Length: 282
Ligand SMILES: O=P(O)(O)O[C@@H]1[C@@H](OP(=O)(O)O)[C@H](OP(=O)(O)O)[C@H](O)[C@H](OP(=O)(O)O)[C@H]1OP(=O)(O)O
Ligand SMILES: Nc1ncnc2c1ncn2[C@@H]1O[C@H](COP(=O)(O)OP(=O)(O)O)[C@@H](O)[C@H]1O
Image (cartoon, rainbow, N blue to C red; front, side, top):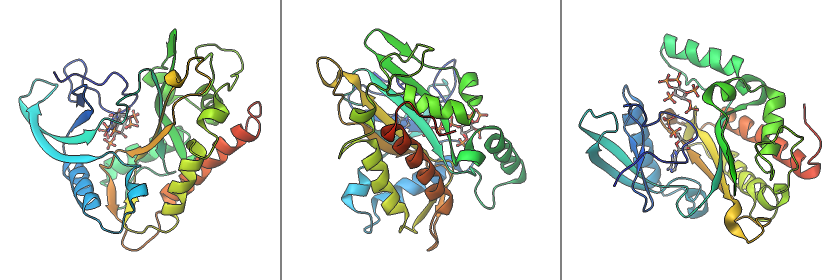
């Protein structure tokens, strides 16, 4: 049976009669095609990305697998609606901690309509996007006996200092506490040959040369599960993925400086935590 995803931390949600994504519990995530050009644009991205021979397999693994579209009963009760059929990025994780980081100092795309441009610009300036090159769009941190999930309003108010602290709290064993984050899982999640930093650096290397796409308003999604070992000290390999391609444009042979800049900034934050978990960047 289809139901709203339990671990969705940002974006349009299938709650209170609204249109949002659904999951089937067996590994698939159904994202409704959005109105305006967004749905068509996102479908267009997945279609061209899937058939693009110049993308290495390793880079493909950062993106949700795409399995076409399907007409499904929409979560807002409006009847049959086309949905993108994607891999559920949290499949197999029992208690995932998840953070959605919207990358880029500007979320508006060239040629955006005036009202959309103004709305994005205001959000970019008010949030940490303009200052840091990325912002937190939502998160949850799961521990065996508690879940910390700041409200949408709290997330919108995060300033640069908060972002620094939240990235440490995300890998702490006492997420709901107001005490200084202990960063107990920093090296297991952010560090190591397969950790978040290594994966972000791999993505960065691709963005330093890829000129196929420009990713406006897309997010890096980081997820890990403390359930990876008995004492929770050695979590499963963290997953770094890209999502939200409603505003991806043709790169026209030009580097995506906006995304690359944001990615470099995020990498700097994560590196600093690994170098000294007690130190704040700001
Ligand atoms: O509807 P809102 O005001 O919550 O804004 C949405 C954003 O939520 P947030 O900035 O977190 O409040 C939302 O951001 P998140 O995906 O939640 O990070 C999107 O920016 C969305 O725009 P689009 O579908 O990508 O064009 C935004 O949707 P639109 O307003 O552009 O439809
Ligand atoms: N393929 C996926 N599998 C699991 N969760 C996903 C997937 N894609 C998105 N999500 C969840 O949904 C949220 C919003 O996704 P996004 O594509 O940004 O939607 P929107 O276009 O409504 O902003 C993400 O933060 C994440 O929590």
